[in-house]
Image 1 (cartoon, rainbow, N blue to C red):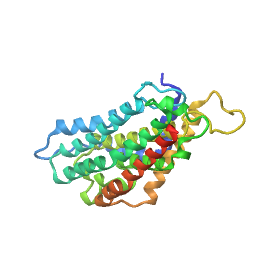
Image 2: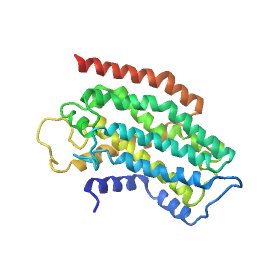
Image 3: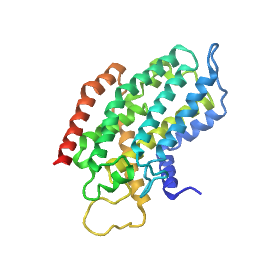
Image 4: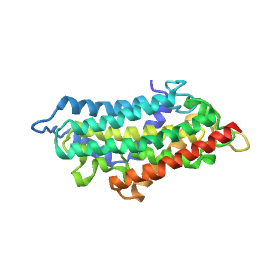
Length: 289
């Protein structure tokens, strides 16, 4: 039987997805797979299979309420490693068909991951510095007086932006760009394309879920005076915060148009990394003092 928190997360993701993905799933299930003349189907299928698996393994260390399915002392390291594995999987999935458009889309994902891994990693490390731990559960517990999103807002914003980039979402969706006829997904059809889309959604949800213990206090209520109205329902607080984070990421997709790759890389290297370093230094000084 699934833990209640996992059921809440699954129901929330389904509600946010709406009706269109259900119709699209039914269409892709009934569609035939496609192959190119000189493809490497094993390589492509490995990439397509690894993407959702990496997303699930990343979610395994996220405290879905008051505890994580797998509570590791180095949970942040594991989580970040699974994210790197996920964008590597997209690159391999684009490489496998051995076609120009899918290969270009895969290399766009590689460039995107390399650009945003550093600000993403620094944004993850910043709350770990404040809590003195690499365990997401411990980091969430350290925010009983003040959420980290309040006093390290730059890290929080950079985390959300890098999450969108790592999940090639919204303005960072160039690996699946229309100018490449779908990019990394151009030569995939049927179940193959369904795996790629499902893995993308799962990666987005897993990364958004990690924002809750890192910056929003996990399954605890907001640090307000007075008794907790839901003392025995940390999964409910977690789901409410996750809905807010996912709402921000969905709004980003509608509010910001697709960015060209050179602008994406410039934003990461010129703005993202210096800002992330500055935020980490400020938090380090506060902790030391």
